[in-house]
Image (cartoon, rainbow, N blue to C red):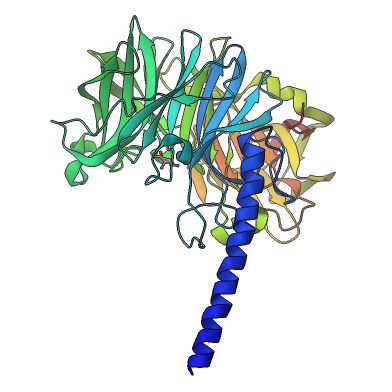
Length: 500
Ligand code: FRU
């Protein structure tokens, strides 16, 4: 009995030591390629790895922290490279640490991107008990890049970069710059994800939090003259419990962001990718209208303003796979295409992918005046693959519903507009969209398992649907109960954003 026990322990120890050695080797590989030099890849051979959506070179990506700085576009992001556990939360093997680092990807043209070394790791921040550097933002402080971010779910830290390309950051030695949740505000005792902007000579910072007793989101406002000394002001926004069931007012607000657009102001709450349009009075946000930036699998939409004055959004695409498939694939999570946000006259937002992305198009195929009657399908033959852009104008005619299907032999994804209910449905996701007697203009971006849909510039649905084979999808057009006409459809192959 005892012998078996000892044997079992030895075997277990060998397995654990073996695992630890493998993990150490992997971490070494990861840290040598992320700490110095350029991150390349970590054997990600998964055919569904995105080619023109931003993703980590390997491992886990979540929230974006984009910034336009000295003429270049930067995406800092939540990055975890524990390979056997990309999500990095549960089921860690001995030797593994569930770390959130700040990864970094940059571009000078918004089309081609390159991976940069990881800029911040928990162990370089003197907080061995907190294995994370959580979300935040980067601002341009008179030519110095300052990152403002979360430690331990409530403290705010800063780090500065003197580099033109923001390649390295040095933490401020007297961190934290905010030590705890504000007194006098009844929060759940946590706050995180600072968003900072400048007005006149002062800096303002909002931080995501929640009211005690499950009363909904609250966002405290702080003020500073130097990004170091911060004074709590008052709640910038708080959920109204009498109107509590609005999307975006969930118990805790993560990653809020705020900016002016036209003559209105926009506040973003991550939950359901909700945006509020409203007024900004006495340093408080007063909501007037709310809707969703995306009805699909987007969480944490964040923004940068570029040299052309555009408000560009990136948002974390939470893909539909589970931990096991992430481990197998070697990567998890990606970002939406850079979306340009504009204010429409009715006070809602319009979105379009940045113009620059047209540079990735090739092999255009165009068709016009395709009449689709009844439940008849038109298959666009010989068009099959995993990286496409489709631009299509549907005239509803007498059809009760119409749209596109993406077929891969086994399963199908269906994007359908329903005339009676005025909804755009993409598998199990639906979004309200009133065509107001006009056409449905779709732009659809397929990239591996990501399908990002823009409808009439008003509605976005991002879905993650993995085709059953790497051959990808074939495209069909359909209408039901009456004829619809596809006035024009253009399809392009899309190239890669990596490696220029
Ligand atoms: C949102 C979030 C943030 C946190 C970060 C950790 O997705 O939970 O609140 O700072 O992710 O990665």
